[in-house]
Length: 357
Ligand SMILES: *Cc1c(COP(=O)(O)O)cnc(C)c1O
Image (cartoon, rainbow, N blue to C red; front, side, top):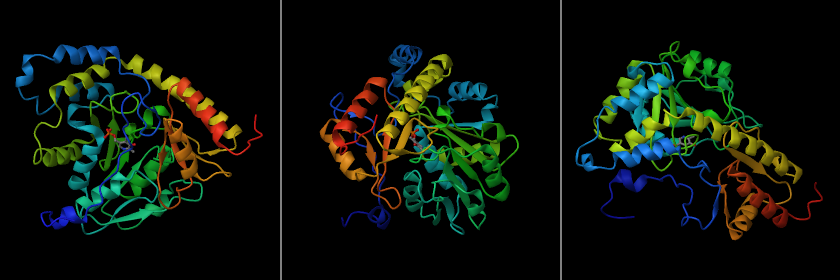
């Protein structure tokens, strides 16, 4: 507490990101980063942009990047918004589309930034419980609201929602915006982007942090009909004209010039995910059906916080959330095959006498 803090600042419960240990000191499976480096095309583009022009402000409209993204998804530039990480776009979206008269709806088990933003912007919210198998039930969202937000696939459960159910959400809430946070969509789920033409209330948010190996560059984008994009621009241009710096703009643009590289890494990660899932199941873990680049696991013979601590002692970082319903689960990012082999070896040592395999 401080006498200098505003009542807003004093009342906040900030988001706590996963630990970023000193580089190379740990096997890092805790923040869903991509284990492979960005495309050489991206790195070269950024290198080329390191010059005297850094004295100039970047393009406030991010025209080139916006055009590249529009082309990638067969949309118009007016249907694309870019931001400093998708977290920033989420913050803008909360302010652009949600009101105080009704609650914002999101799942009870989901990305923890949603409640943080709702509190920061003083927006009432109601959490809608997932069912016993951690599934989102669209019918539960048929209640008064000022908007809906959910990740697909959901985090940290990794479970995807079929497009038919996204449609149900959109049709049941035609008067309010439904935000689908597709941070992990490239690893398996069904993207809602093809529905944009049909639903003026749909906003889809993507990030370059996961499938495109660019968490350090901080770039995300939103796709939706021009009315929604304009809403985001109104908020952004009342906050910061230059959310993306010159290097981020060229690096992100270059990423869309090398789709083959991204695709091949996704294929590798999905393969590693499925192998790791089978191996963990053989060790007695229950593992949700993952359509993401992480696994959500629980073991009947050892509490998750204990496994978390023992893995940490062995130099392996995973994510544990001490929250209702998921406090016996671990979220494990899919790393390289070598990292996953180290994880499995550590698990065998940690777990009480598994007569598995
Ligand atoms: C990682 C993640 C984000 C944030 O991505 P950035 O673009 O790095 O800010 C947003 N939503 C979900 C569900 C995520 O897991």
